[in-house]
Length: 459
Image (cartoon, helix red, strand yellow):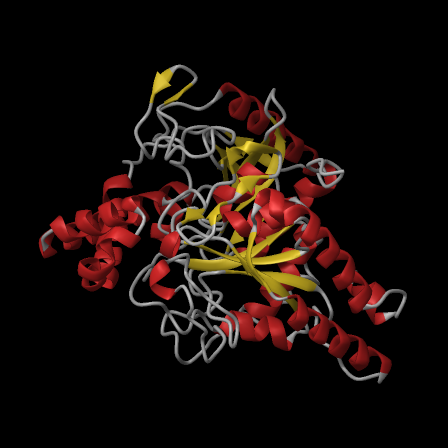
């Protein structure tokens, strides 16, 4: 698409109009976009085309239609955070990653739906309602980047920007059958930030159909920003240019349970187990060691809910009845912890980080399922059981949150389907700062097991 625009084989405006037409047809069905920006998109597409016609230098993503999750500030475009509190809020500035995408020439199609303040693993809120899974309209699309994932899966957003505070890119990518990358913490700077919510655990990243597009987006968005003290210096690597440079030797750890998943759906176990063997053809070593690491779920839940409490507790008195009940529970849970509990959680986080990195000293990559179950029924908070066995509220998603605690790069890539035709994702985890290797392994798998020809059927 990028080369086609550069070579003037097709214009950005033609592509944009085609996608707008498709959005108008499909979005009423799945509710992925909450705030379309078609007029803005058309003007940006015309500008991208004019740069090409005039022979001027263009950005890496010039003219490519893109969506932005409704948790990100977008200058002059309604940004609600999925909350009635900000129902009519219009920011005066772009978030830095949004600004960088625009500077690279992206065409903004609109904002995608998210649960209120991104607090939940499903995508619904009191302003826009629920987003449906394009593969089965009676199933969840996941969250909190569920609108972004559903839009990419349905072919109404070539590129999407999401965020991940506990699986919020990877889980919906898995449930919707697309690629989602949570880069190393700090790789993409975040500013301005909405309160303290997500502090130290939330990563921004791309959701795409092709690995090449995710690499392009990361090339554009990465690099230090002075207002985000957690942001990393640019590593001066073009992920796009080095994507196909596969390592000759690689040692991969494969775990179906990471020592923490109580139950894994048989379809997930089958799909991920079959998929990982595809990587053996590259001459890489794959081992299945036992991971004897204590589940950090209590530390994660303490930190996660405490951050929401610190951010939103002052709004409870006025807005409680207009908030999602699940968010109110999060805030109240966070308020119930003494300061010592939060410090204990940070200590547990440190211990998990150390033990995980000791485990990974012998390996370059860890592969796990992304989610323990294919997409389940829309409207429920979590499946009460998996394969006939009772599970906790977090039992369906044990694999993603640990790497928000450690800050490691982690991606979800489609690796198969359940018996009833629902996508299944495989998680690829790398050492911190090894974003390129995660992308390279992802690209290698895409080359031997492409999935892009399989799409939800909307006619």
